[in-house]
Image (cartoon, rainbow, N blue to C red; front, side):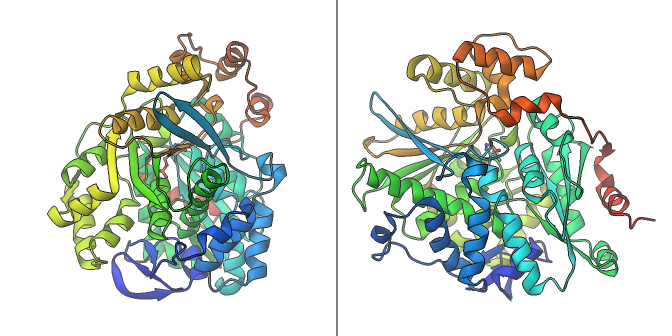
Length: 502
Ligand SMILES: *Cc1c(COP(=O)(O)O)cnc(C)c1O
């Protein structure tokens, strides 16, 4: 299996190369040249597999320059009971209610309590394996822009991993107090964290600019280092996310909620379009998925896109109670459009140029039609989010976080728009509610205070549900990182931190 770039059809690279490189030199994203088919008799054989075994089967199809032993070693180090609390790192919770056949796919049982752990616990394994193959002994410098959860998950995944350094940028006022504290107290000798005066898109643009700056690249090479990415633009982030959609489907079959071959719907709270793209790829591999429901918060650029075919980021940016979705440039949409436009890399390049130069592009009727056949787009504002958290708690006794609430609300909107509602829906539950204690408390009608640990304690008191240990213990930890930089100074910060500035 080789990989090409969405903006350069000539390129052919091995899996290990695209994982090390992260993003293509001309700014495109790496995509597999084909997708293996699971539907032709293979799916039934996977039913009995436990999560790690299933992951190995799927990874083997895509990481063709990794040996079977290498893949097994990566998986066995990542999805341990020690890190995820159980032998299955994910859980599928059934919440049936008045015609809703909904299943919450809890993806947040990992070390940092958000779904990002599913990919970021294994990416360092993939990357160090890939570096052994073609890194030439270089040290990998992982640059990461975060809207809150990626940063912490990447730091946890890469901390003290030999041969790597990790630098994380987050928007100063764009993350929850708990997210900030998680990052500021990060341990490890090879880590650095820095706040940017700007929003997530500024942080992401700064990081992308560093990746495509050839001068910086040669400066690093002189010091035997290379840049790589832990953002969902890295193929090594997306691939692990395909697995849990397959797993969820098989779990529905195992528990006799669905007969093999019958479809499910998938609902995903979306920001950078990574998680939902993984579901699309699973569908492309033959997993029976009827509709992909793309749920946005008040930053509803994707809802508008799915409804009109015009992607227009020229709009107000809202800081919401679901900060990990406060994004106006959803990078991974590029991969979907590459696919739906018949892999037309020159068309893709022109759309992306339109986006970066004018903030807008339109995909035209034919592509829009394909988008709408596959996706339903909807959004949920702040009051709807709070109301959904409260309703789920009061009526279904399920405590969910704000991101998951957005997805549940949009699922309900979607149900109001379709005829056949007997199809079960798997809703991605992306964070532990205690990660957003203040917002969840307020949604339950309580007053939140400045100190997030008090909020956490109060939420435990009201609900009787224990907060995860790793969040509770944060209050005892010492803060190590407090630096804030203007948004155009990310490159200088990187060079200084690596000790190769000036
Ligand atoms: C990152 C994140 C999202 C959005 O996922 P994308 O892959 O960026 O679309 C949703 N919810 C939570 C809690 C997240 O951390």
